Amino acid sequence: MRPPGDEQATRCGGPAFITNEVNLAPESTMPRTAFKDKVVAITGAASGIGLAIAHKFARQGAAIALIDMDQTALDQCEQAFHNSGYRAMAVTCDVTDPAMCATAIKTVIDHFGGIDVLVNNAGITQRSRFADTRVEVFHKVMAVNFFGSLYCTKAALDSLIERRGMIIVNESVAGVTPLLGRTGYSASKHALHGLFTSLRCELREKGVHVLIVCPGFIKTNLQTRALGADGRVTDRPQSRVGGQATPESAAEEIFTAAVKKKHLLILTFMGKLGYWVSRVAPVLYEKMMTKKFTDEIQ
Ligand code: NAD
Image (cartoon, rainbow, N blue to C red; front, side, top):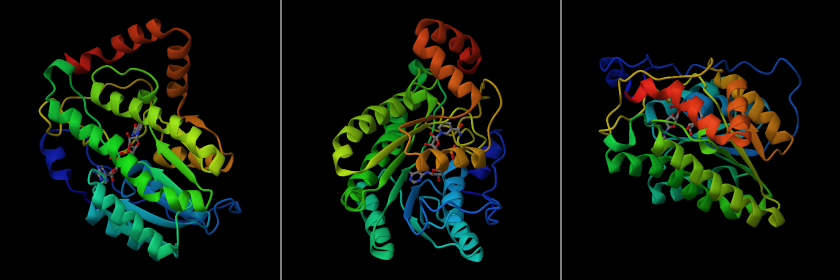
């Protein structure tokens, strides 16, 4: 399976795309009942963490709405879910378009009767020095990461309140710490943090839970599609601290955090370390992180 953009990424020398073939085998242990027969709508569900979350909830007996703009990958994912006997529907949607988000969420509600869990996961990143980066790149990153989540949440809100449901937001450690060379990405994730911690306060009395997830580095297509200063997919090498976790392990932890109704989940050892160092000694964190990432924007 070669998602759109694969050719471009290969041509510009970026890392190869990771295929969307997840292991759709049933759970080896007994599924928990917390999300059985619940309706889970996931944006950015045709790849990476979103697809792994979709698979995890499907294996636990939930009905899944796979929402993504990549129609080819989406159709293949839907087919794979159906072949495995899971309840799933695919909805093509570019989350930067508020009308498409409203229609997509309505399609899911009409089909399944409502939404119990909305996973705001669709996202893109950017790797470039602030001074070199065109303003359009910031608009694009904000449009997908921040406004995409806002539009889908607005559209699903009544149903989530009616069902006393849950919003899961896939943020990033860059949503709670600074990150050199990703000013646009980090800003979009900090914006999500402000939006959803505040919204949590408005929704608590209505019984809607908000779980914020901050992953460290996970092996997905995110960096393969990263935008450069000019808005095109960049071929500049990525800096990383520590190894990369798998989307499947991330989805396992996200599912457990959802069952436990956690408020904040920081993923990966380096993610947790970065989060705590930045809390306890913010200037030290800035200096250490700058040293690690500075090659990327030289
Ligand atoms: P990915 O590129 O594998 O998946 C992202 C998905 O979002 C793709 O299927 C893509 O088609 C979809 N998407 C992009 N723009 C869209 C749009 N406008 N409308 C609808 N769908 C769109 O990357 P991933 O790592 O699985 O990313 C998922 C989320 O996890 C993102 O929000 C990302 O910021 C976050 N995250 C990832 C990492 C990591 O290391 N991979 C770390 C922290 C946070």
